[in-house]
Image 1 (cartoon, rainbow, N blue to C red):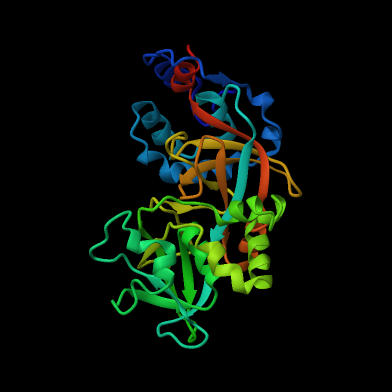
Image 2 (tube, one colour):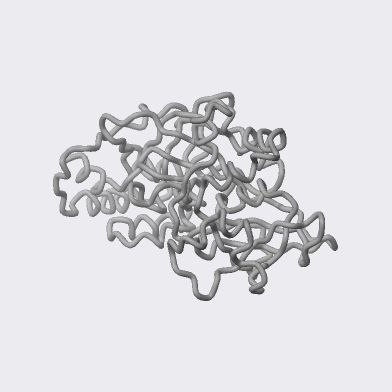
Length: 344
């Protein structure tokens, strides 16, 4: 491993020894440790951008092995040397390819009062919400189950854009006078997420590459009579809150600031939130870079699913909407944790 150049050699060795000396227990050897030479494009990536994203959310990780790394990351060390010295790349054994999609912070056109153009409401959390209530499925809400209760934050013009706002978890509403309302995830209705895109693939309305965000939008435009029924295949529904924040940073479901092309959403049951993740995405636009797990999503389930955050606005949305690709996901873990998971 490469020594950290902005840290004295003795101090770097002491910190590395501290991490390795932590108790290690076998975990069924379900994981395999790689070398950095195994990571395609590692030497060509700008790890400094990933380090800045990592330092912003690292302190939220409670496991003690991370604490000294978080403190040192905040001092601005040489990024590649930092990761190569104190982390090991880890993959699950006998795992299939990872599945990548893209997401972004959308900007929707909206209004504070409904009219013929702006007809689709963005709702706050109902005060007496009962998770899983059959009266609060997406279909029931779309058909007026919450109408007239004063829960509307704003109304937007496009139901598909609204559907994907639910999946993204945050966004901005541009009003007619140019003002912006920023909304973020508050809670959901407790119903399980089911992918409308995957259902369209199952019904052979779309093929797998065509089931991207842009593909679903185009299908909806061509099939308006069946569009709402397709969206309502997903009973999950997200409620929002207004964010008192005028910064440029977008925030994910866990209130962490996101970095375009450096933040990803993962399933926290399998991937440590805050961990660095190396991705190798195939498809039309190959992507090989170090990301940070800083978000979650209702559609992101399983150890090999990741959603790449592309940024804010229509250009980011266009790029994110084209992603429906496979590849590989490698988690970078502190040395002691990596060795423990790999069985020592």
